[in-house]
Image 1 (cartoon, rainbow, N blue to C red):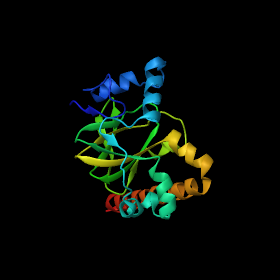
Image 2 (image 1 turned 180 degrees about the vertical axis):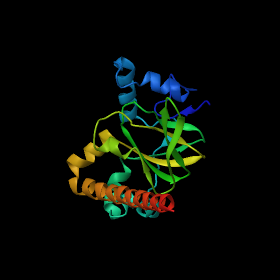
Image 3 (image 1 turned 90 degrees about the horizontal axis):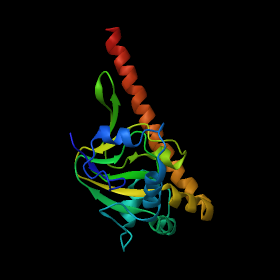
Image 4 (image 1 turned 135 degrees about the horizontal axis):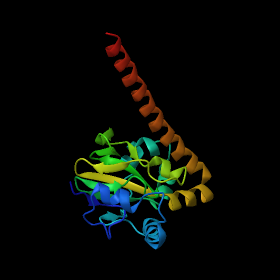
Length: 206
């Protein structure tokens, strides 16, 4: 299966998931190409991304990650994020590549996928609107632990680690509120996972 690449665009315009794993194996020296990726992610939006001229306060405030921010704080955050429309089967990031971007799903759906030698592709999670993808990129500098692919046409809000660090330095109270929103989303996921595990246990006992 061939996927569209979103992070970044060249030279893997029609990269397969195996191409990604080979190119971004964390055990390999990533070299100049990886440096170009970091530069690309920090300085300009990926293809299709754009900065909105007018702040849609209600839409931003409706997202859990930004719900604690007031209008003035959202104005500041708005300068550090961009919106991106992506097609179905677009690779947002691949397992093993550097993590620099956090995606907030405004609409659409993203699958988190793990490739295994014995079983092949495993869908670990399906993430929808008002959720986030790649959140660990704001916290650590570890390579991506899985691959994220859109399962339908999607609209995403994107913030990179460099921009978030700028907010952290200039407006730490805003960064703290964003992190609190992030923690609420992660906590909600954990509760959902716990419930699924309990349901599975009940089925097994029967």
